[in-house]
Length: 153
Length: 128
Image (cartoon, rainbow over all chains, first blue to last red; front, side, top):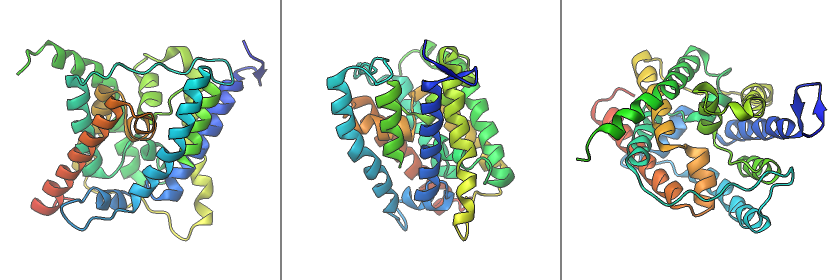
């Protein structure tokens, strides 16, 4: 399709690299890679630190307008369609998965983005977390099958 | 910056910027169609932040040194985000801003899960 840079990457890949770089840098700058700060944000029942809510809000607010523009346009600038809305179905995978993810996030203070951004900064602990997370991702389809075959409670 | 990155990825590539989806699709083989795009995003997110460290007095993730906690947490995050099909960036940033019911529900649930984990393991058991 599009013109290729250095034989392997096209314009989409270059955009992906730039977006990933800005994303990771934003996570570093905003304190999202500081596990104690994240746990302080999740500590609603203790010494709650609300500052990370502004990081989420600061990302959600511009994206609200970007979505409206993108959905009206229907197409991205490099030609791909804007992804359809997922049917608003609350299934067991979403509920169980979100709760599991939240529990892990609270336990270690890292979610997937910051785990990427701090991979080279978090010492052996960060690397171990990353390995465990990738293992979990590889194992997820098997877990999903088990969840689906079990009868509803 | 996080919103800007999400906007760029959506407006140029037509993709939802979700860290767990981009990484997960690569490692479980479901995302073969966009391998290089995924790798490029991940490479940016992993390799560029360390370059900013000299600008700061101190960059410390303060991660626990308890290996059991780290492994358990990593597994939970890995399995959970793939079951739920998203994490803080996909469901949180991109889902909430689209007013997507699944993104809103997921965010409420993982915040609840995180709050309970901190309550139990910090305040009751004192492990973290």
